[in-house]
Length: 346
Image (cartoon, rainbow, N blue to C red):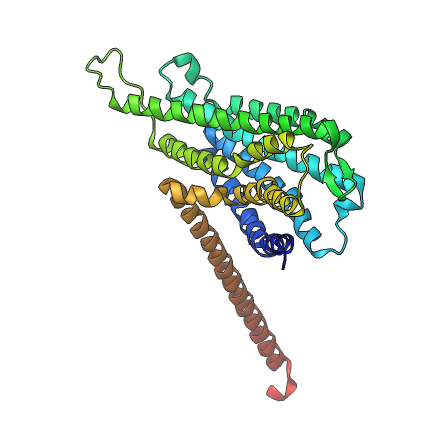
């Protein structure tokens, strides 16, 4: 087999087997994230609002991003290469939901930095109603900004691929590198500042009662730990895409061999699809690994679900037993009445 065939086979294996597992676990994880952070004692926290919105956006990425890729791997003709509308719609929806998810995590980092700040006015930014407003704003912004994808993204010939071409390919590569890098830079900077502020707050010793040290609850510290785990995974899975975009912009007019094109296509699949989708599916499991409180909340949720099922089964069994007893008593009364009305008994 040639290098092109080996890379194509590897891509099919990753899509048909790994992404299927990713799809199932990702949907389950996103729903659990939504339920856990939506519980009464967590949903009032501003950081939980960002985690809930991130879970919703990641679920949409899984449904609108992974599902078409899986279907394409089994269909004889790829829909994105036969329908211009499908090509534009898939590229646009995947991009906007990914950017909404990244922006939500970036805002969560800013929120945790504000919470750990020694400035009272900055700490006021860490409120749930502000978080809701900002999530709505970023959703509207990312619905509008990438409209150019619908206009210029299309089926390209020769090679028959869904994407950009010509001058727009260079413009889009620069645009993709910028809009992907900005949330990552915000995540890194503000999460670093949040950790530094948290360390400073813990290390401060204030004998002066008039100006006591700021207290940060254990739950907020755990949310910061969860957020750091998210930022690390986002960085490792997303940093390659802007690098690849810049490389493609630089080498767009270069003469390339068949093997080089095959390698670039496989790297494009890894950076643009596989790693990014893997990130969207793994957030819930990153939360499990990084936070003890989150594991406890999941445990209580599962036990509560099993307890409700057990209570329902018990109630149904008791109801059946009561119905049988009532029916038995009615039958006994009817039998006695029949015996009393029978003339042979006189």
